[in-house]
Length: 233
Image (cartoon, rainbow, N blue to C red; front, side):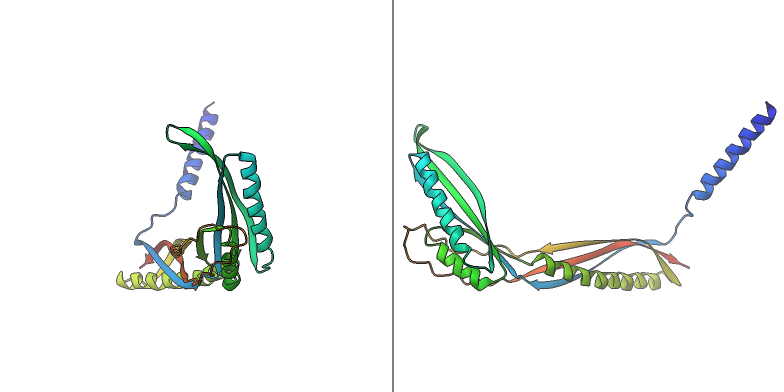
């Protein structure tokens, strides 16, 4: 039994020694740093939301009228191959008068368009506004252009991080430094959506509304590199 106790004690000491050996050595002169690189990119994509909204006492007749208007808009939009189009939200809800008395129904149907061809999108919007209202427009950088810029900015941000690390190393009188950890994050800020006068829906067969002039503006793409370095004596 005594031999077993000694064997158990020896194993425990060996295990404790392994745990102590696994503990990382204390680090000194550790400094947190952050650097970033930014680039303005021209917005190359426009998106717009158009809708038709009608009232009627008969919900079935209302649905037919709204769907017909939306389907006609989709058909016209497909004549512009450089513009992507899809259906948006469709809603029907009751309309109440004073005294909470229902007096009819209101229905709304939307279509959403997206294009890199600003001129084609502008012409299409002008044409659709003969029977629909322009709800909103927005400009952005396409995913592929943004991804390419981010990939290039990563190298720039890491280089900026190294420059700052070397400044810290010299300020602390170190001979070199070692990067302990590094993380990379990306950011994107788009401009606020432009404001346009919204044309009221007109009767079928009305002339087209003058096409809006689009200026896409720019968005800012940012890559931030943060981490910690250890300055070595």
